[in-house]
Length: 293
Image (cartoon, rainbow, N blue to C red; front, side, top):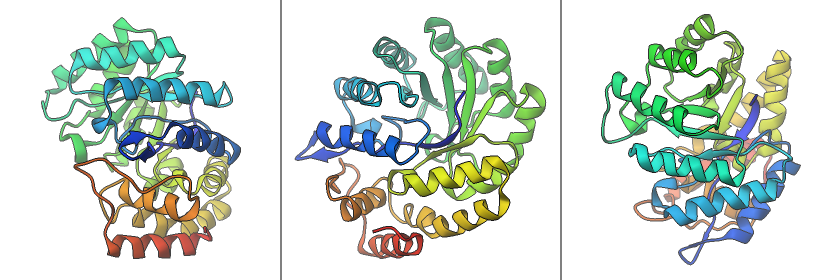
């Protein structure tokens, strides 16, 4: 259903407002460069600082600009179930192909609470859900048994997971219980090579914002079993993967985009700030190693 290189798109800002023209241009460029799907309003898109109106408008612009060329997976998660439901309903009405649903953060629900939260959303809106597990940010961890139970309850709604837990054993646990049809997408660029080797279907990527063609080529080689080419491309991208997290994301990737493309600025919203000089040096070195810019 979803596979390959899927950028978690940055949200361009200009003078405090969403730069819609730059976002449209980014969508077109990503598709032209080979990205397999698009995720607006995820973590990299600074969703926590977007108003609801801005978030829904970005869904609309992304779907409109993609124009059916690639799927759009709208970032709909919230730590409030009713707000997540509102985002899902808007995404469905706008024409998104799926919803990316992060584990509720700050509230710290139990596994029973996670089951109830995601079950409620699956029951209310006819839109495929990709679970998003990133316990380093949310504290809450969607355990494999919870993922498996949700996918068994709602096989047509809970269709996959973006896993940024760093626990590679979960790939096999999910595959044994749910089969290869359950979509497993890596949430860490620097682990994508090994993730795909374990049965993953691709990566929802930060690096693909600035290196979409290389990331698409890497995913194609990796998923086709071309180990030599996959290793070559992974090693070309690896310093950049790491450099983009030398400061709070998406500061480093916005710096890279501003430097290389020019039509996306570095601007982020508080409480984020522009990345540090040391981070810029690391990004510069990663871009040079990857042959970008």
